[in-house]
Image 1 (tube, rainbow, N blue to C red):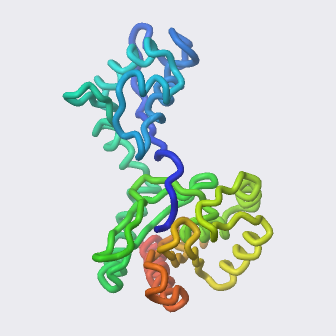
Image 2 (cartoon, rainbow, N blue to C red; image 1 turned 45 degrees about the vertical axis):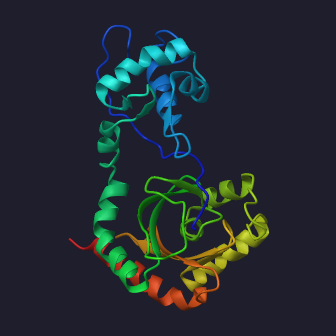
Image 3 (cartoon, rainbow, N blue to C red; image 1 turned 180 degrees about the vertical axis):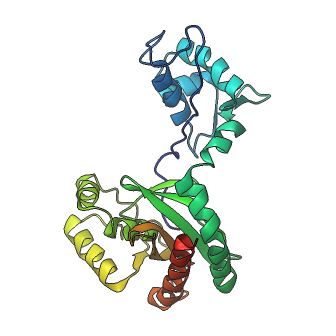
Length: 274
């Protein structure tokens, strides 16, 4: 497994011309600007809470029930949310449709997918592809291997950079200020092997830049190891990372490094191809 999920993916709602009191950045009724309240409602949905009642949604969004109820009509009419037969609310297909247009997700995924599928077929292991946003890795593709170790990652899921293979690669090549921010944030010890020492993290990041790949050994669960390598853009900067996630003890992680690095280089060439 390449990480424990840390919150929901950021979903962005396409701007819509407001009508009446539903509008724009004005305060309207309730707490804060209308757009901000709408994003609070959308941000309340996570992989752990994909469907909620009105009261649950109000509590998780931190907004009054009356405010949430008033805004749900607009969100449902636009297609950002849906209401099922039991009265629970869930994310709507329109929101997924808009989110899929994000160039750092869909564009990268389309070019990388043939190579990710090849890597999956060769190894029969879990293959994952991620980009960085802030101090988190966002997974834009995941292919589950036949009989491979179970993973909790999902497309759109977010994980802290410091614990995952793809995250360590992205952090090693991130700007210095991003690295400092990641080291300043509290470290969550998920397993006895989870990295929590900033000094050790600095040493590992230097090794990743030297070796060209990262190994996350049982940092998230005690039965999984990931091996990851960087994907470069046309200007040479690291724009993504690809990883294999295998069951601990089945194969030496470093034996997989050449295969993962080869796939990463192939994806990098595809990224700069006309």
